[in-house]
Amino acid sequence: MTERVVVIGAGFAGVAVAKGLGAAGVPVTLVDKQNYHLFQPLLYQVATAALSPADIAEPVRRMLRRHPSVDVVLGEASGIDVGAQRVTLGDGKVLTYDRLVLATGATHAYFGHDDWARFAPSLKSIADARAIRSRLLTAFEEAEMIDDPAARKRLMTFVVIGGGPTGVELAGAIAELARYTLTKDFHRVGFKEVNVLLLEAGPRILTAFPEKLADYAVRKLAALGVTVRVNGAVGAITKDGVQVGDEIIPASVAIWAAGVKASPLGALLGVATDKAGRVMVNRDLSVPGLANVYVLGDTALVRDASGNQLAGLAQVAKQEGQYLGRALAKSIREGKASPDFVFRNRGNAAIVGRHSAIFDFGWSRLSGPLAWFLWAFIHIYLLTGFEHRLLVAIQWLWRYLSYDHGARLIVEPERT
Image 1 (cartoon, rainbow, N blue to C red):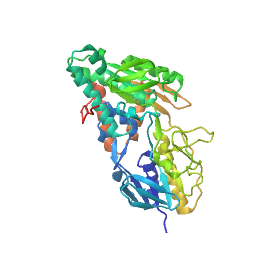
Image 2 (cartoon, rainbow, N blue to C red):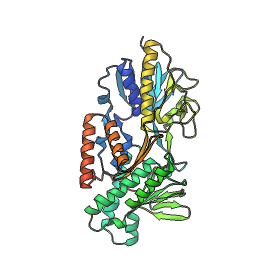
Image 3 (cartoon, helix red, strand yellow):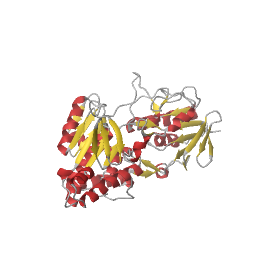
Image 4 (cartoon, rainbow, N blue to C red):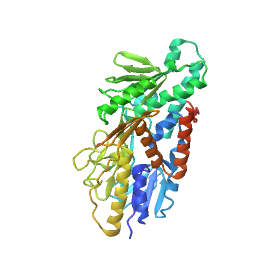
């Protein structure tokens, strides 16, 4: 009897596993609470009105239609019984498995201040991106209609908390949206009134990059009008602004990009996790002490041959998924033992703004227009499907030529 594999999570890792097993004809059940796969590296462009959600999301069934052995189940896992080899879904449905793959990604972490989420949304989903976009655009609408200088200043102050790649890309994109698009649409709000502030609790931004590239990013952000403040740990966030030390910064929009934690589903396995909730796995991505259970992507703590922890990047998750799909297929079909997973670094990148990006390959570093072009090319290539690649490429070209953002819709703005 052929073994059945249950894969939970349709992110980069989960989809790659399902494709690999499906190509080998192995029966697979892929479970996700959404019916689409989200290209998260470009989610910030939805939040800043550069792209629409449909530009970076692809139906999971469409992605896997070539693999008849793969079943897709729309649902959310609520329980895992590793002894009985069963997964319970939120609607009570039970799935049995011979092998289980957990790839449910990560969510935002507010370091014990979950109440801040109400005032400073993070960026992990389409709903998050739409909420941020609505808040940004609503701030301009309200500023256009008032005369009080203090109120206008608060409305035109946007704070991004966290100096990692997501925070840097968000801050730069917000500044460009204000400079090149919104201040042309609004008659009473000028770009000089816009204040974009990037806060980092540590001594510098982009700690995963060499200091030289981080310094370049700071200069380019400053040229866009972004103020970068380091050693600025946030003490409180309210509807009126952000507190840093003894200073209260009045702001209409705050965005949280300071921390993530693994999906809580990993804890249901009953095994050791790190402080961020990531499951510690073997080099073949199996879980120590559990038979036929594998964890990968942002839910797993994976180390390379030198003992270094692999970063929570899309390329890491995708390579892990491709590896596990092939390895499990050979194990199931041919009884072959799985080799250790080997990560091949394709480079770490962050876009800062128009014509500005940084790229770290380890053995080589790039910054400026060439890095920006390479970033754009790679992200278009990695998008799922020719249609998305073509549409995004056309929109980016038009935005480059016209300095315009087209997806400026306020959808159900939140009231706080």
